[in-house]
Image (tube, rainbow, N blue to C red):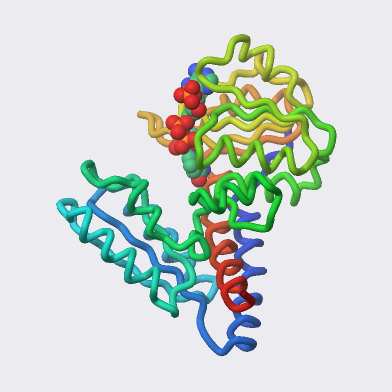
Length: 283
Ligand code: NDP
């Protein structure tokens, strides 16, 4: 039976450590760390995410600025909001909650964020730095997964890691981070042939697919470490991409949904905001 990786508890640990780093920052630089959040429209899931992010910001002692624009806001209005935050010297991080309403070009909006304020780590400059192994802001979800692995003292070097999913915000940066930790990394996706065979060779298996209970017990290697990134809203509530109940009997570590990667993602957003503030002071 697997050890369950408690993402909620670990996120609290990260946030509590941050609390004292935020106090030190204030004492040293004489100012607050400020995260700005832009929410456009009335997507209920986005509203919950933003509320949780703002709550967490307050918890660690950072300040937040929240900008809520209506569903029918024009691309120009959203762009102007982001542009004003880009030049605001008092703002350390800019988060534009995705998805944006139809008709607004997300890429165009995100490009208005200066790389040094890109707390989500989505911009080409930051992704490129990750590829080059340079210090940068790493997307919050893969950063959270890596922290979960490290905090549980899971050996990574030389291990076979399989990442299911190749999105720009989860799969690809996750693979790069594991490569940096000396894993041998395979990225799988919807066109992968023999997915089951690939997965059953994985010492570390990361599921970031978006399909409820997709990874079943017959796909995993006994003793593997399984991290479930998926968030799927079903009739039975929120479930992950992994058939948790059956897979947990076979593996050594597993993260649950909810209470796994989700809370870690928010904690790493705050860590990223802190790191952005620190870099801005030291550049
Ligand atoms: P995307 O939809 O962008 O990517 C999903 C990936 O899964 C794609 O690369 C796709 O392949 C692959 N895939 C789909 N079907 C299959 C299949 N049958 N076999 C193998 N691979 C498949 O999703 P995201 O990366 O944005 O998110 C993934 C999941 O993680 C979602 O459930 C999302 O809600 C959740 N999530 C959770 C976060 C958290 O904080 N916990 C944060 C971000 C996301 P292809 O590229 O070929 O289409």
